[in-house]
Image 1: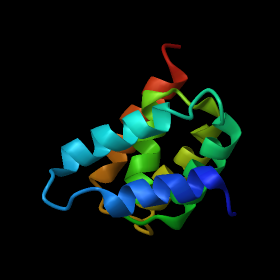
Image 2: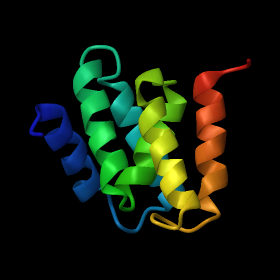
Image 3: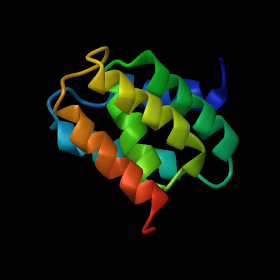
Image 4: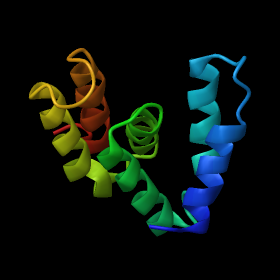
Length: 111
């Protein structure tokens, strides 16, 4: 999938200073996603969905954090699939399951 939003977010990842902390990087990327959250939501969702499927760092964890921060319900099935892959040992370390579960709980809200 090629989109201006994806290209723009990818450039933000590539151009972020390496000397900065991971936490600063994630906060920066969440702010950047917020710039297009309302006006280009569909393209943002498509990009995050792709990042959830590639299962690489930093893109996949970023997609989880951005989805959680903005309560992107559209990505719940993709995040559940990721969590299941972590449980099966197919993606990331087992401890990442807790982070994914917390993100899902935030997106789904109180029952």
